[in-house]
Length: 239
Image 1 (cartoon, rainbow, N blue to C red):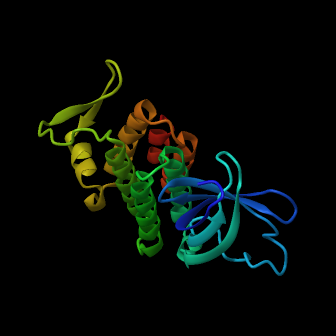
Image 2: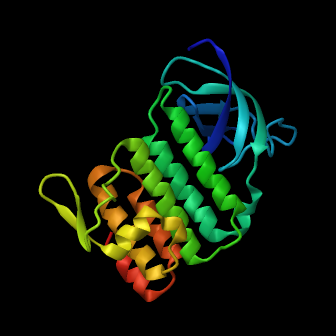
């Protein structure tokens, strides 16, 4: 790979300053995470001005250096800016959490393509949504998190028809799950009860803590932003 010039579709995951005029940009591609140096990114006449930002899907061209080094970004053209996220604070917070989760869990190699699609679809759903309520935000959160568990091979068994069931954790630990929460997890997109959605988010939060090590602090912050009622705050502060 080193010494090659590679063109690919990528989602902009994070941007940080490198110098007074340059950026380091992390991307998610169909082969994994790629970190590029964008020299002169903020100069007034830079060809990169306005071409990338967090949540953008872009076509990028970069020169691949040796593994572990910063690659040199040569070209960048936005394909999907997702500008609607800027006017929806809940969606923007969810997008940040989705990016961090995907960034931490996506493997390098061909399996990354499935994660790229998952993240792109989740960001597109946030962009297109017209319902900006806490209920809809929790539906989006749970839909994404269950998809992450599915891709990771960690999806809990949701087929139990009993009134109450449990999710098995590592060792002897188990999570009790009510029938209402179980039904919500089977189809979060159709759940209308905010309390049930919050309870389902709590269950998945505990499940994530035991099985996935990713963006837990960001998740707690996002849940506080989504649920601005006292019941929601009490519930997700436990996770």
